[in-house]
Length: 498
Image 1 (cartoon, one colour):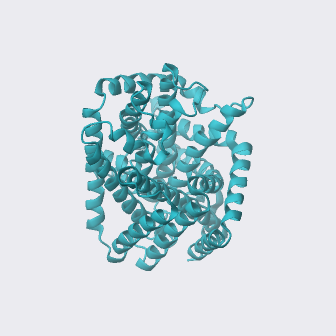
Image 2 (spheres, helix red, strand yellow):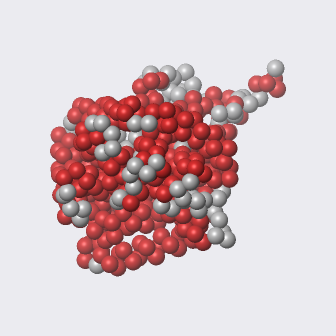
Image 3 (spheres, rainbow, N blue to C red):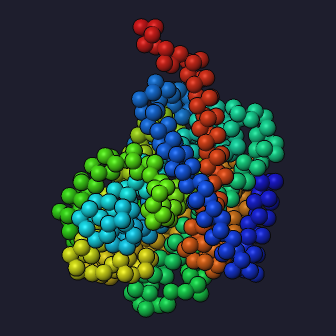
């Protein structure tokens, strides 16, 4: 329980500072964010690319045959169900929030290469959007999930981040060292989930403003978060697993429905051609984008800090939460199948999503039909809908989708945080989950109050840095244990014997 009390105490101090001296908290988070992006931007690019390389290596390595569980174990879920769960894990508020907003911003507002409003800008906008939501993003999730699943299911360790570092720290993971590691993981998770909830509240507010002229301010966002908090706390209190299961299915259904509506009534041929072309430019430029830091160009460096470094920090902060979920549904898969499924399937789905919504937004702007880029980020998606048949219906469905994602993300977040702060228990107590639900909502509100979306981004970049070091140690620990086991099993030596 030490991890629980320490984590809650730190977060309570943060919330109180935000309430009592919001300007000071905003200034501190801004200063920390500037320092980290300027001093460690290169580090974020290298470490995330290394995670991606490690994952891809397992596709061709003989150790890819090793299973996440006993070698004769079978997967608990069919492959289609498993793919759907992976898609559901990554298809959250963020993808809805940035679906139209990121590509149109890269195209018309702040280009990653300095060219705005041109044919080249269209290609650049899509390949960098793919870059932020593709293989690198899923490698961050995948490496955490892979290491957790390996130690949990194959070696019977507790479902804690600290337990995966036993090959490095030994029994110290059961003492203070382990508790410090788990506290850092909890704080990173809270910052990631709270940021996502903040984005959700802002976008719901943006939709209400665009459709019904309801003002965009902290009061409306407070009411939105309060209503959703009550809903997911009722779920946590009553243990309505069936209800959350229904909501998860609703999420998937709504996402598919909104996607098909836009794909059919939108510029279908343009979407398909943009999707095809953008995959080629993404793969062609992937190595250069992975290490692009622009040390001699302040404008491009600012873009990288504001976009690429921000997204890498977001995925790192979100990775304990998503990693634990993916690990739990992947028992019985081989490492090779796991890597293929986690990296490639959700990435392709995401690329098609951005080509549809982002591509449509770019087409409207490029053809002079609408100035989507001049609207607030949270209104971009609703503006795109307004130019097509059934636009109002699509906007209403999108707000419902964001709300259901909000509820399921918060509810799942309280479960994962409860698990992380009760020594890896798969059945954390209701009181623990309710406390974490309140802390998530309070953190999201305080960060919105002190500086809006920028404060959310600043805090997450700061929280992700120490956890990225833990992730690097997890990879080292995993490789050490994996290759020791491979040697014992004779994997990698079979060809020599033949």
